[in-house]
Image (tube, rainbow, N blue to C red; front, side, top):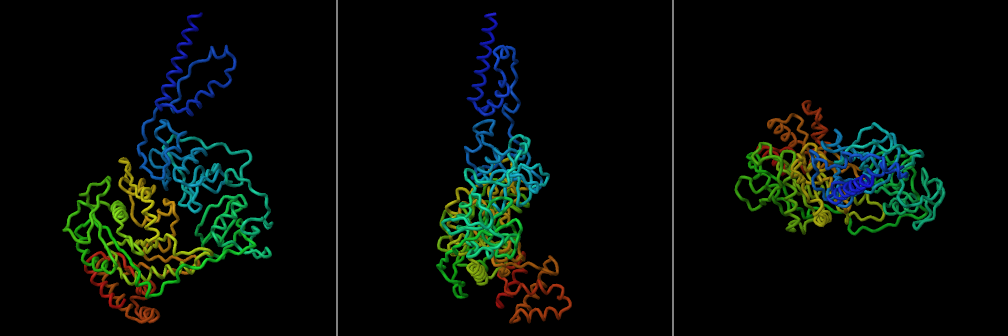
Length: 609
């Protein structure tokens, strides 16, 4: 009997040593080991019971798992220590991605537990807003685009993710949603804070005056709505509620708002007249302070003194080489310019050409459609050159255009000034837009002001990273391309640039209309001037586009828009298209000028500009 006991003790020691060795080598994590041991040792209080218990094999989840078929790109937003409890090998943190329309990418699974969701929030450097029970939202771990945070929805909802509610995926085995709590919370609450029990309409004393929440501030004597984002944030702290930041929504009331269902506060910049039952205005007995502007609005003369740097990207295909002489004449209207290409492109060297080394992609340089729909593979190295060599220092604006853009530099300066002046008109109390980091969107032309360019330079270590995962079809695209690069392999500038707002630590203000021909509105709902036009109403063939340009030449000759419209309506062949044609007058950018003949025809408009 003593020999048997000795043998059992020896086997036990060998088993324990094996487990310790697995933990030491990272094959089994301490958390997983504990999770495996706990249910097996629970209830083994009787020594005799422990003698008769059987040795149970390790669960498969504890064994080293093969790598997923689609691994993650190295994401500069990742915090290396944040995923320690979710790794099979402690040296490899969990990798997170945003789900697309088709769900998670191959090798990834939806995040279905709150603890993993918190790690995902850290991965994307977003605040974790806690958990909620909302049947109208997708289930699981969600990135709320407008709120700029991550939340975990406990509801067993079948609603799919959307652009505003993206589900988080990670390279870990799928699990089950946690059971619904017996007493669901009304909404996400700030961790570690106590929410004062203050009924709506009751004043709360704070450092910014006596605060109240009401459907209308006019209902509260001596109260005015808070229209300053910083003061809105202070009010949220006073009430013990989460502040989710600034957003632009046509569907929300203007100013500082309390969202009853979510139990948080937000600030809507758009000056709407919307009212909603589940929204309360946040009011104060003290008015927002006014701060004088550091500069006045730009006059037409000052607009033309604006220093702009223009640059474009080309792979120097034969068709692009034909356009370069025409494009160069347009770019020379800027205060300085360059064309960027890769080190292997054909064509003679030119003084205004800069060659840059490109990252590896899944395509060969000789492929017919090399970098089609992924020109950010070339533009990111171009930006790296500009920022590292201080090329853009001293310019008010840096503008990225394409070779098929026909543009008027004087009109471009004036359009930037018009957008800026509308921003000044819309400014919030206490804000000076001259100090903001601003990106202006003119269709698929992008203008970056000096403060934004300097912030990009400071944060280039984060936003300048590329996808280096050889198994991803987005190999070579910028990391800021997001899931689109991994899902479909595309990283076009008009889909990527606006992601800077999500990836940069410093705030970025984006104004203008994405998509040539679209019109955006200011915060006061005043339309910005049309900046990009491409309404070739007769068709897309060269001769059809030439005919449209000839008609534009006639319409631009009229001294006013009304005269041009009257003439257009007098022509039966033009009547169906008058709205699109007349609005082209003196637009700074015409898109899809893809042949030398079209460039020559467009230049006929210059004397009229």
